[in-house]
Image (cartoon, rainbow over all chains, first blue to last red; front, side, top):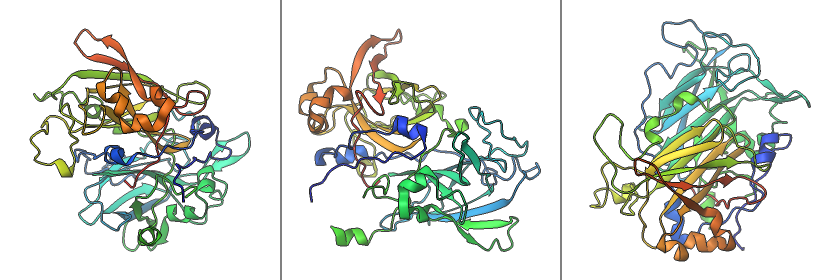
Length: 222
Length: 199
């Protein structure tokens, strides 16, 4: 089979995707240059002790509005090796679907007890854990009534592993029409957290979300 | 090949980083690689440069909120990886990984001119994340470098090679050489992007 670079998909009903997705096929990296394309991120990031609990802005502040959840999982490479000491950067909207980001001009309700940003590190086995508020879905395209389903953004960087992804929630009505979910096709299942018993933890819901960093930078059009 | 591939775990899909990558995750130390930390004595060896440009969309508009990540060799052409640990050409004050978020779509990255790695012309790998796309990757080269004519990446893109070469544009009062490089994400003059590796 002749090897060709992929042509990236454009997210349907996503204006930004239409404006920013390269139209040319991706070029294949010559063998002699392959190693140079793999960054090694130095382990120099810090995180503060309370950042794992994104249900509060600080440990002495009340809980934010909405449903507190725990998210746990394991980060591995495609060959199964744990990605230890990786930095997980997490960001998500509040219960009302609003980000506390200066560029979120949606006008949705802010919550004085919610920041929605946090960083955690994976342990020696690649495991991570954080608490968050179950994010609200929001109307991304009022003109055509398209919603962004509930999701939590996650960025993984550790050694030569690099991934920016989103965790979605099971059985959400807006999942099917999401532009990125449509591009992922059946593989979208991998990006949905698995609900599990919250057990004795001080949250109402809990999800497992194992992350595998590897393969092409997307599974589209494999 | 396919038998090997079937032993691999299915990768989590990359997804768009959206427009709201947290601004407070920015790290000034990753936006200027010429010194290890503004508060510490530790200058990277080599010629300081400023790589400056715009990230543009299909209509020539600035692509706001983009994340740019940089990866390069040190002034002696050596990448800092687990494989080069202990190598005598390692610069203790340079690791080669940078990251910035541009609110407007215009960017400026301070670093040193990378040396030529074996068989390569000096270059910096740029990984771009933004709303609407998952990551795309390219390499930027520099005007007037002897190795450009024989670099395998520049050769591979053929007539598009000039789109990967940053233009020298003088220097600053403090002696940093300025290079200009626009990244055109889509459409007329589109920058060549490369298919990713397992990473």
